[in-house]
Amino acid sequence: MIPFTKMHGLGNDYVYLDAFESPALAERGDLPALAQAMSDRRFGVGSDGLILVAPPTAPGADARMVMFNADGSVGAMCGNGLRCVVRLVVERRHAAAVGGGVTIETASGLRRARVVDRAGDWLISADMAQPRLDLGSIPARRDVLEPAGRRGGLDLWRVGGVVGGLVSMGNPHLVSFADRLPEPAELDRIGPGIERHPAFPDGINVHVARALSRDRAEMVTWERGSGRTLACGTGACAVLVAGALAGLLDRSAIVTLPGGDLRIEWPEAGGGVVMTGPATEVYRGVWPG
Image (cartoon, rainbow, N blue to C red; front, side, top):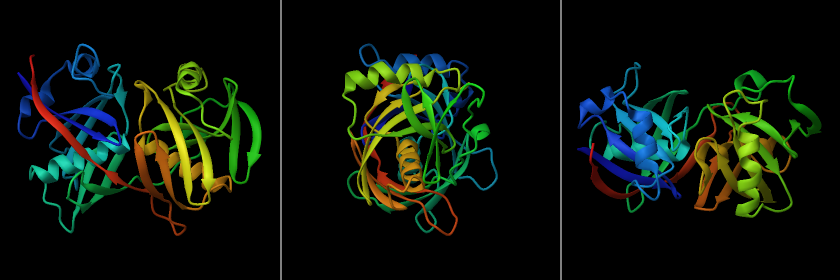
């Protein structure tokens, strides 16, 4: 029997396995298959993936998150998932939030986060590190990409009929600004082809965004390995970065996703992109297996 917790950040939901309380979970060799089974929205728990929360292996970290997408593939980073991990380890006292802060070990490096408010859905602010814009960090193949000019300080590329900029937030993102957001059926049509385009050897997350003002944007997301989701924390960070570089957004803005709002900030004087949003526990259960 496998104890689990269902949590979400703005509807971007994951099944969480607590290897602090059940150490054997960290030794399981079937986590990709388990992620597929538990993520199934008809025959499983239903989620965008599975996140293992375990004792850290990196010096200076308080906990480690290991992420699997709904299709069983390994994920490098998830901003909404990170906030939920912070809530879990602080609430269960696996880590002491000194000054309200904890450090989480991820596949993309250490991420420092701070508990802003413990009431209700909890409010958590996380430093998501510096964005990377070089194609090698995405990663993306220049020989396959079609250049589409430049908007402000943002290089544009044409991929599968969509023009957008490329940003790495520890995972890869294509951000396309448009006059309107696509309907769900449209996103379902264009998303898979871009996600698996030959230009992106590791796949890519796809976001279509619209700048509503200098300090507010809205977006929809097609996540690699999970499909259309209600929210993507790293994607919201990528939208802010791309929008700021393109001259469409200030370096601090509210980004509205189908599941709700995130505050995203990218300070001028260095430092990483800071994401602030809720972390909600839905329920706890036991999975046979």
